[in-house]
Structures are given as structure tokens and as C-alpha cells.
Length: 342
Image (cartoon, rainbow, N blue to C red; front, side, top):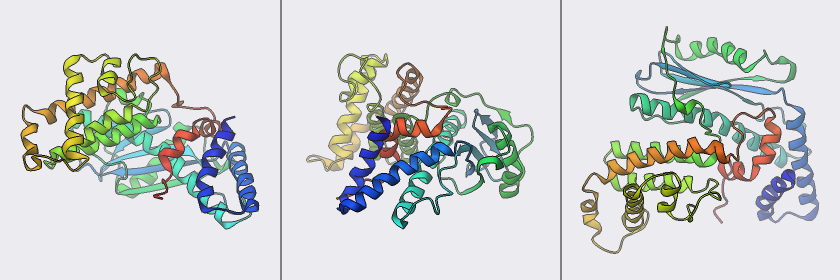
């Protein structure tokens, strides 16, 4: 069933090119070949490291079961062990188009897993130091392990990556403070939480540059991202109403009012061309609405991440990544692939 749903999503995209029936049949078989191949390559891994420029301010270390973040001379470096989905496809498929497509698909999916780990570090950095970092970073490195060439457990693979990290970005700082953030255990593989973090940090960057209306749009997008979670258990309609989402998470009337005010400002001045007093939109920003909105979105994001475990859709630490990808494919596809502008 999960495989069929995944094939439907991919073929829906492929059909926009109006292939012939033989081409479509061949591509459909290659979808099965992709999933069968990653199932057979359970021991193929890749160890990715990304440098997050922090101006030397983030002098702490933090880690999980398959990732770690370490301060170096150049900045904080996040290292993850991810499935080896981005390489080894030459000769697997019988046409160049399929080889290119599935190579990129594997690349984006394993990149998403690495960025989910980076998200934990970004939020930890924000909470501990008030530092606004970006998941792309300014430098990266990788080590591929195919089958029997893997050096061992995730802990061993991560430890083996540290000499390469030091060579690229300078020695690891000695005896860094170990930061035990709750974000270590929160499920940033859930696209709603992952996307909420992206909008939250974008909002903080905009506020820092005094783009307040634009920041409010991003802060409202945090709430909109969380609306894509499972709310079947909640009363009202949290998938559409900001007020109902706040209520479902246990926030009172004052917080609900702020969420609706931010939504109003987004619609009237930020996301659309307003029809009245556009020069004076700043008058609506009095009474510290930006600060209130920032604090509310941070609290909503944390609370939603904490209750996610009770209504879980995405396994944060699967034993079998190939099965995880099939089971989660419809949401992961929307998170990693590009929507056709037509």
C-alpha cells in the first residue's frame, strides 16, 4: 500500500511531461527498482558534516544517537550519519533520465534527514545564545560507506569523522560545555516542525534587520506550518483556525487573540497588497506586537513538538530507513521535491 502511494506521487509528477505509454511503464518499473535497491542497501551510509558560521559564539557541544555538533575554530559543525541514497546509481537504471531523477531524489531525501538534525542545533543555538544560524552553512564534507566498508555503529562513524572535521575547519575546541537542550529529543523529521523552525528563524533574522511586517508574515507561517500536523484528536478546526490551534495546545484567550491579530496583519499588509493606509501599517505594530508574536510562535513550536510524540506520524529514529521512506513518502516528497510552476 505504501509503495503504491509513493508510485502515485512520483508518476503524477512524471505524467506532466506527457510520456508515451512505454516510457511511463519503464519509469514505473524504475520506481520499484529504486525502492528495492535502497532496501537491499541497508548498510550503505554517508557521514555528512556542515559548518554553521556563528562568529565563534556557539562554544557548546550537543549530540544525539546519529548526529553531533562540535565547536571548531571556524564555527559549529554538525555531523550526521544518514542513509547512502545519493550515490551508487550508475548502472542501476536503463536510461539516463531515471538515473538522474533517482540520484537527485536520493540526494534530497538524505539531505532532508541531515537538515532535520541541523534544525535541532539551530534551535538549541537560538535558545542558548540567541544566535540565528542557517542550515545551509558555508562549508561541508562527506564520507561514504558502501556495504562492508562501514566502520561500525553510528557512534563510531561520527567519531571517525572528527579528524576530517578538524582538518577542514580547525581543531575542535577543548572541553566545550555540553548543552542538554530539549530539542535533542524533539522530532524535527516531522515536516511541520521542520518547516516551522525554518519560518521561526527567518522571522528572527527579519526582526534583527527591522523588517517587522515581513517578520510577522514569517511568524504566522510558523503557525500555518503546525496546522499540517495531526489534529484529528482536537476540538474545533486547528487545521484552519489559528485560535483553535492555540486552544488545542493549551493556550488561553490572550494568546489566541495575538495569533489572530498576527494573521490579520499578515493578510492586510504583509502577504498581500493592502487596500488602505499602507504607508501607516507601522501604526499597527505598537504595543510590542512583534515581540508578543515572536514569543508566542516560539512557545507554540515547542509545545507542538512536545505533544508530537502522542500523535506521531514520522518515526524519528527508524531501524529501517528504506521502509521509513516508503511509509512517509507522500509528506517527504512534498518537503524535498520541487513543485512544477505550471
